[in-house]
Length: 487
Ligand code: ADP
Ligand code: MG
Ligand code: ZN
Image 1 (cartoon, helix red, strand yellow):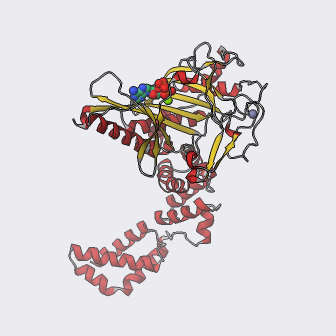
Image 2 (tube, protein in one colour):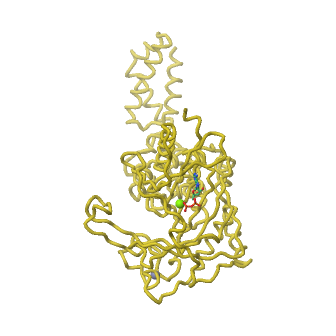
Image 3 (cartoon, protein in one colour):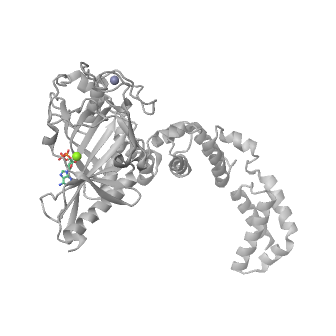
């Protein structure tokens, strides 16, 4: 049987940490990277007698997400306890939502397709364990450390329908979802830092079949790229199993970035293993009309509309608009540069080229670049008015991305400014042509090919005499004018 006889089915569970000021059920500060166990209190440490109080901002964010992703928000939703033991969760249960979540039946547009989203619910994050010794794996570790700063941080879990049909579409879904979450300002959506985590449920079935195949759930992908690779690998693994007459086992698998494979981790737990029951310490969440209205009106222009606007108003390609929007903060950066007077097409070119390259290389985000958006606008103007050639601008930009210097400052410091003054350039051209009279003579007598060669040589000499700072467009024109007047 051929691979073409199977079709992949993928459903994604995305967890996002909400960027609220405080945690979900207590007043502890919600921040990444603080000294371990400093943002903790009796509630998030699960001490006896402490009671949870729901953070209103989380409900606001959930409603905003609901409005942005076309969800229904039922009259009321409730919290449940999901019971299990693990040292990163001192209460021995997680407060989450189960069969009455805040958002149901949403969808998101992904490259023209509409992917259904079953639900989105609120829940608390766990603490973080670090296993020391033995390569960081729990079973080989000498001891483990627990940091409860993350315990009780608010999460939204967003669960898609099993409607994604390829690894590429899985990536596109997450990229679009991430762009929406970033745009509505509810999370800083950094897959690398774990504020956005994706689990992929993957199955394959006979093409044309309407029944779902047995799925494996893959964890531990911390970039879009590894998500794509992991799903791709898993699809092939399952097809190979079925082809060999074996069965796919329902289980949780772990993606290993180094060997590029998924590995069996544990058999899949069932809902009844968790003994879900309604959380008795919290009342139902029943947002009133005013809260719902406020949420709807707090949704700004969404990525799809923004892309359309950039393509129309900036006259850039759909592809470039997509590249801009794939990096959190980059569109905002480019928009600010355009607002500061930079030509939109040029700003896009630099943003999706050198700037993006530097961000990828360093893992930085645009807002921390020493080159503020109006600095990029300045660079674009320096090219437009002929002060810098494109090549020089690249060098200047390389400096400004790393050091807090304005492009003009770098130009002045390094004496970089391009010479565009026509009379000065003409003087150098004349000098060089006079000094190379033989070559000029050979150009005059030569055929097409010889002429090209001689002209190239003369251009090189002129360029050298100007230490590469002559405006190439003006030089080309001057050289052509001079040469044609000799023939
Ligand atoms: P859980 O993983 O907690 O058991 P669900 O059973 O609701 O929760 O499924 C979670 C995710 O798995 C959803 O995104 C759903 O679309 C996806 N899913 C369910 N069954 C399949 C399947 N056979 N193949 C691929 N994805 C599936
Ligand atoms: Mg799951
Ligand atoms: Zn707390």
